[in-house]
Image (cartoon, rainbow, N blue to C red):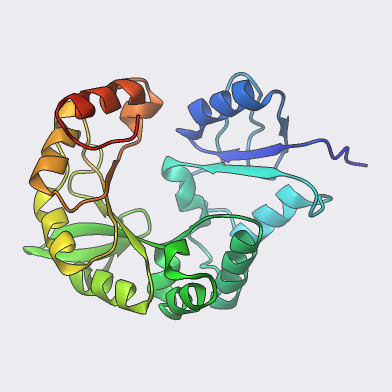
Length: 265
């Protein structure tokens, strides 16, 4: 018999560790659920990994095992970061399951749903979600890399070239109803040498919805360059520099405000 006193935390892979610690400190004791193939993540340590990169876990089975015995009254927090997302690539979630999961997430109170590989597999998913919940709920996330001087859409954690022209795919996604676009440059991701300004300028010229820049932030100056060079971009996204405390978010915001860049403090 499971004691339903949650919230329950289900975590996979590296960068979820500091996030798990933060959640534990903010929310008090979290019940950590064991999942087959996933090492138990201990409260207070944030240590937890899932399977191996060469052996992806089937998503439906993993979720079923993790949620076994819980009800609609229970709260579950999923943390999947970095290479953890690669665990869910095979098999691809069927289109009807993607549509159902999207509907359930938004019905449960999620403000937005981000689609990436699922939308490449089933573009109609964007239309369906936007029509039912409004385009403000649908975020199109796109992983982009240069191939022979052209911007291509990649999937599978940046390993599989779909052959799709990235700018055309983004335009099509917005036309279908995506109300926001997250553009992740694989070329600059993890390099910490600055955002991909050329790519972001091209996207902002193309669409009139909020564009979020991702990939390349290594310091405060990179955010300054982003907002000054691409004034139509709505936000800059970063991961490791925040996760590992290299740049505290409040410090970054104060510095941007000093340079007359509009940001909420």
